Length: 396
Image (cartoon, rainbow, N blue to C red):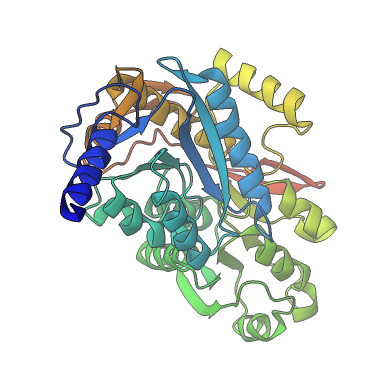
């Protein structure tokens, strides 16, 4: 009798799983399984990035871009889309923890993120195992699309492109031949700094010093003193605005007043200016300009009216985050089917649909994904601080 009751209970459980827990009969033949959204439930998309801590300006800004994308497409075949916002604080460890949390939720369909390369690298194998597709707006470390992942994609340019353009600009336009390199030791910052050093050396420049710093500290006088002894014409920095601000604030004290700090897309934004004041005059960063369009004008207007900040103030990446989310939503809409009152989203088919994106009209340009998930339509402009504002640098 007990054996019969056990078998009956097992059959009932299987029946519930097949029927979508009472939402009608559901068929799923996808190799990775299907997300099953019952009536009254939501299609969960997660933005993942640093919402608190030193790098929160990036996460707040980019989550807003994703939020606007969801507002523009709030439903998939009659089922409401819900945007989750998960905080990594910018760290790989927290990135992995968030990925495990999201992978355990069967209603999570896709990830807009992660934001930083280190956090992204830690999360990719977790989402790969769970069959959850992801599109990052800002994880630029080149090797990320060379890992053989079927779920990872990005709509941003890569650091090897940025390093190449930056080295040519520093060497040719600014005429700086003797440079020092600094970085924060992370996958993004160190990788970018190493590539810049290699590229400018190939051009005929000289890297006279290279120093790593520990993120989160407030005193970098020791590595700056080591660099000052080598008398560079320029310091190239790979990392983010919080540490870049500390460095530029301490340049004069290290005897390097007037030596420009040349940052990257991780240092560009109003946050850097607010942390440095007059000390930032003459420092450089990378910006990725957004092509003019009616859609981008509407996005900027919506952003400012809804959040009270001018778009671009916190970081340059909210349009990219909009596009990463919009690409995901468009792909979900194509592969999702309603069966017996349940929305069924095949996970492997969804990942393939995202990877097959072609000619998608985003805010950042026309997006077409390669076979490895490179989907960007990039261009790069180098910005310099003049009179407390970012302006386009000379010689471009």
